[in-house]
Length: 126
Length: 151
Image (tube, rainbow over all chains, first blue to last red; front, side, top):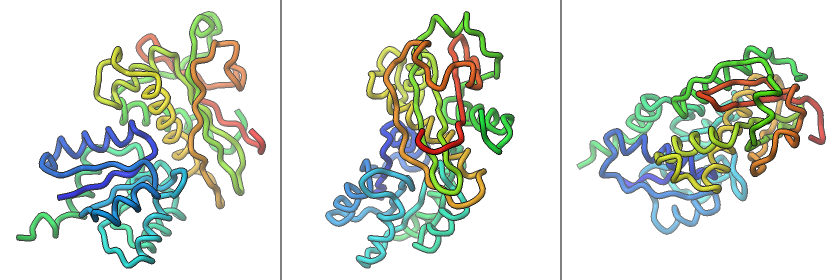
């Protein structure tokens, strides 16, 4: 399984990566991007199974990334991990097709549960 | 501090971020110039614009900032470099500011965090007594919300 973590904070990317490694994703191929533009290039060249993105980032935000992928017809499971999980942002994320929105700070259980649910079909496929 | 959200809520947000992200317990304390004056601080700021305009600043003493960065990067404090300390403090500021923003009414936008390198006590802005102060195992955390544009 390929997971792309998109956040402008290296510390947050490290924290997410560690949380996933400590769960059932030891074998996952986890890559990183520091903004939406970098992620877009990465997804176009090698689509992941799941994108975990911050909402608010410089260059291109997470929601702009998801909306661009939608416009491009790229179908990828997408979840947000954001400190700004306001009702308006959650609604916009849902409209754009996000599987989940997790607020920062998050618990390990919360992140693992959301990722498990979003990747259930992938993990169960032959 | 000048905002519609009660100070107790800001305390709760700050304590929750430090506890959940770092596993550190912080306790609110009264501002003590004698204790804080000898320390240097790393300061982060996010601005909020829209129906509510203002800024949230978060800072902590340099030794504590190093320990926080180490906790986030999963390394020893001595191994955390200046860039990692800035990044970690920026993300902690982003979380406190973002959580604060979700409590505000209306349509608002959160900026990306801006982090100042180490500053002495006398350069802390807004002035130290205007902040809410916390202690954490010998280190100090300060947080402030300022309402108004052009911060």
